[in-house]
Length: 339
Ligand code: PMV
Image (tube, rainbow, N blue to C red; front, side, top):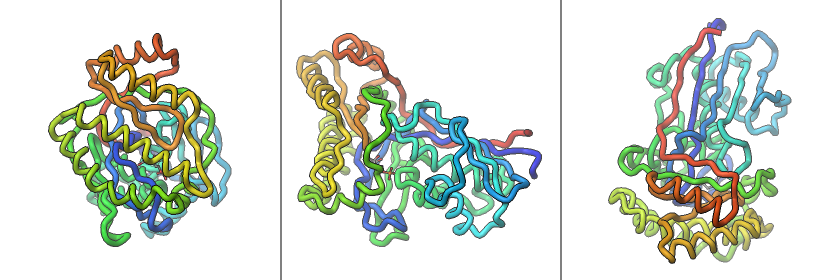
């Protein structure tokens, strides 16, 4: 068993209907249903091998992560061991992102999803996702486990458009693919206005959401917006989708900025970008809509055939040079390699 290692890859995702605020932090029970688009190129690749040593060895982007129960990845490994009841064999884990960490691409979503797959793959000696499923870890169970590491990670276990439903009880949560990537491929032009690390970690800010006077009205409006977004996706209708996803992202940031303590993730340049994009769209320059994660970097959704034009306008007319152009993508993979 120790002769080989498992290689898991998991995609990042960008939420169209946001997960913001949780009803329970331990079970990661979200305040509302959310819906995301899985990305294609923005992925985490994580390898895991059984290790003859007293502790896990964890490397992220070439740097050793000291064993510390407060670290998200180490804490997740400890949690997986408790949850699955498998022997506590230490692992050597190496993880790499295909995109810069903390740049507005959710590295915690792809990272925690890939870590879940790689660790379980190593412990169960699985060589594929089908093997993992036959050992009791089907997609639903994997999503539930990944969620405990980072809420949005549960949506990185599937490709295309993914719905995470909160359910009536923490155990009644569910995650499923609404549409395959080919049903409505979109491009996501990620505009890296800043590569600085986040100022407010999302864990704290999720808790604070309830203190915003805007949060209750937001929650009341989510089901209708979600239904409209789902209908627009099924109809492959970017125009109907766009207005709603822009309003959704701005609403989430309004909640963040009016919570106590407040969290302001956007930068002056983010606001400038939103104003610029809306004006360009109104002039008929192109059709593209903006959404945001818990960070300052806009994700611009447009039709794949328009992505290069939109990227060129962002470079030339807006003056932002640091762009990543990504697409709707497939779900995770798991393979086994000889070391
Ligand atoms: O998964 P977390 O706890 O990092 O929360 C992420 C929440 C957002 O990215 C802001 C929205 C979402 O639904 O992904």
